[in-house]
Image (cartoon, rainbow, N blue to C red; front, side, top):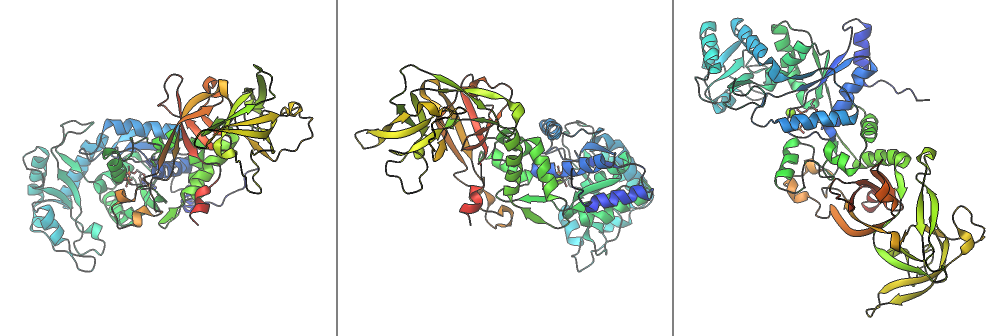
Length: 552
Ligand code: ATP
Ligand code: MG
C-alpha cells in the first residue's frame, strides 16, 4: 500500500479552494516560452502543474508564451509538445499567447480609456532614470499626463507602424512611488518590427510578459497559476491588471525553481553550449534537457519519481544530481535487460575445452523481473574478459582471475588460471585456463566455490560495439554561484568513447528494448547514431554512486 504523503502547500491551497467553493474545478497551465528545449527544471513544473490538476480531477492547458517574436521558433514548439507527451502528460487545450493579441490590444485600449495607461515618449534609458531605486520613489514622466484622446490616437498609430522601434511604449499608470518597483508604471507594450512565427507581420507592437501572462490566465479561467519565485514581486501587478479589467480571478502562486548540481539550467546558457559546440546539440546526453536525458537513457517514470521526491520548496535550493541518478537506477534495476559487454578485452583460452564445441547457456534477462524471460549466451573455448579482471601478481583479496585461482564466468563455467602468454614488451596477450566441466551454470555439481563472478563474451560470437561513457558536464557543484564564465568550468573529460568493446550477440537481436544493464558496468541506452549492425550505446549511469565517494 502506498503511504499517504502529507499535502504540499499548493495541494493544501487547492483543497481549501475546492472545499470553500471558491472554485468548482481546478485548471492549471504549463506556459513555456518556445525559445529553447525543455530542461529538467521545466519537467519539475510540468509534473507539478499536471500532477496537481490530476490529483483534484482538474485539467491542465498547454500555453505557449510566444510574446517575444525575436527568439521564438516552431522547432521549439514541436520539441516542447513532444517532451511533455513523452513525460506522460496530456494537456486539455493548446493555446498561444499570440491567440490573444487582439483581445490584449482591446484590454490595453480599455485601460487607456479608464485613464490607467499612457503612451510614453521617453527612451529606455530615460525611463530607467525616472524609475527611482528601492529606497527612493521614482518621478512621473511628462508623458504621464497625456489626455485619453491623445493616448488612444498614439497607441493606435503605434500599432499601425508609424513610429520607430524604441521610440514609444505603452505604460500602465499605477504608482511611481510604490515600494514595489514592478508597480512603478510598468511597460505593457513595446514596438518591434519582427516577424512572428504564428502571427507573421500582422503586429509591430508586442505585449510584455506582465501584461500577457495574467490576462491569458484569466481568459482561459486558470484557477491556480503556478510560477517560480522570481515572479513573487510581479504578483501585485498580476492582480492589479485583473482587477482593473474585472477579469476572471486567476491567482498566482510561486515555488522555488529547481537547480541541480554540476549543470546549468537556463535556456540562454544551454543555447550557448549548443551554438558554441561545447555539446553536440540540445539532445546531447550530457545536457540537462529532457531530450538529452531521454537520449542518455532516462525513463519518463524516473523523471517523474525525481520530481515527486524533491517536492515543492518555497525557498531557493540546489538539488544533488545523485538524487536524479538514484531514481533512474531504481527504475532500470527493475526493467533493464541484463547483457554482457567487455570494454577492454583480454583473451582467455580454455585449454581443456573440446575443439569446436559451443554451449548455448540459457540465462535470465533480468533476475528482478520473471516476465522478462531468458536468452542464450554462447560459451566456447576462446573468450574475452576485462583486462583488469586478471592479475598475474594479485594482492590479497583479489577475487577475480589469477593463476591457480577459481572464478565463475556468469552464465558459463568455473575456470582456473593456468598460465599467461606475453608479447615482446612483456604485456599479457592471452591467459590460458582450464574449465570445470561439472560447473555449468544452473546445473553445477562440482562442489567448487569460486570467489568471484566475471562477465565475458565468446570470441567468435562477439559483436563489436561503441560505448560512450558520459560524466558530469561541469567540474564544480554550484555552477550558477561561480563568478567565472560558466564555459570555463566545463569538465573536459565528460565524454570517453570506447570504440571496440565486445558484446554478446543477443544485443543484435533485441528489437523490443533499448535500455540495458551491462553486467558490472552500468546502465546503457541504445543511441540513434547506431547504423546497420554497428551499435552505439550511451552510459546512462554507473551501477553505484562512485562520484559521491570520490569527491568526499
Ligand atoms: P529559463 O530561465 O531556463 O529560460 P524560463 O523560466 O524562462 O526558463 P519558460 O519557458 O518561461 O522558461 O518556463 C515555463 C515554465 O517552467 C514556467 O512556469 C517556469 O516558471 C517553469 N520553469 C522554468 N525553469 C524552471 C526551473 N528551473 N524549475 C522549475 N520550474 C521552472
Ligand atoms: Mg521565461
